[in-house]
Length: 282
Ligand SMILES: NC(=O)c1ccc[n+]([C@@H]2O[C@H](COP(=O)([O-])OP(=O)(O)OC[C@H]3O[C@@H](n4cnc5c(N)ncnc54)[C@H](O)[C@@H]3O)[C@@H](O)[C@H]2O)c1
Image (cartoon, rainbow, N blue to C red; front, top):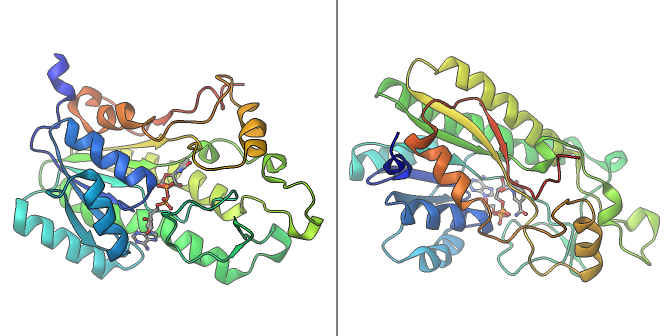
């Protein structure tokens, strides 16, 4: 195999949650490898800002992954302008930031003193459970059904489901604790996040096997916590959990994403690839 196999020349890629922090990074990576990234996101305003960062020629589609009709509309729009779709990056998720909230945050989570509030397990409601699963796992399943189904019927493609270190391990809640807050006010990474991310591994493996002979490869890419404007205390605590000793830069999964999208990984399906400074190695 030549290293040209890493090229994504003329490959059309939909990135769900494309207006978010990592969605933009995926788009930049795909574009740099020669591909045609299309940002799909529920937030029109965020999409406009993201397009400006990726480049004005980057296409964007308003799409709600929790609604099958919306995903079918996105596929139709892509087919009418490009005639095909080669890559699906299932990236949309409600990604609870239990640290100071970045400016790009758009998902309407309530905030208190710069922290996003998430209920501890004892207080979790079924509505909150359903809301998080609807985006992160039902949404990913529906996108696979619509886009992967099209790929399976039209010669194949590559699906990259975005996991997390919490697809592989449970959160150590001690890193999210804030000194001086009452016990009942302590932030915690919600169980829905761990459940969604572990489920996406199951989705990946099941569909990888289902479509192995249809040319549709399905892999899971697990990024690490990205360093942003978190408090020094948080960064120090989480860095102790990472053998390499620091959080991830925003562009840390670009190389692995291109690899999984491209023919360079053509004999690879159903795999879970972690890029996390060794966090899940010890
Ligand atoms: N940022 C990290 O540190 C980190 C670490 C590990 C894994 N991840 C994973 O990477 C992915 C992206 O994370 P991020 O930090 O960029 O998150 P983000 O919150 O910045 O972006 C998520 C995007 O999804 C969109 N979205 C929400 N609901 C949607 C819906 N119903 N339909 C379509 N779009 C919807 C939001 O508008 C937002 O633009 C997530 O799957 C997350 O779990 C992130």
